[in-house]
Image (cartoon, rainbow, N blue to C red; front, side, top):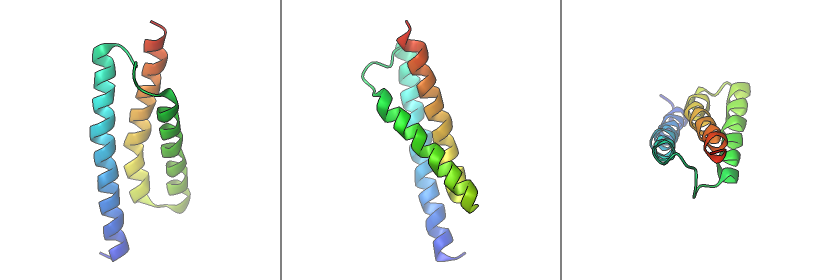
Length: 90
């Protein structure tokens, strides 16, 4: 395994950990409280757009490390953005 592949794997692992621990805990907290009070819509919208941008870049460059590591972020951020729509109308 080349050094660049090793660092790609490490970076992807840390990104997946962030997406798999931080975002699901926020989703659960929002669900439990039935509220998105205290979190920023702008932050999560930008975070979502950032993950989408990285996915497009990764697809065009055929970089599977970036592709795989940003899919959980897109999915989790999409859920949080839906929670903004659902819980703000209550």
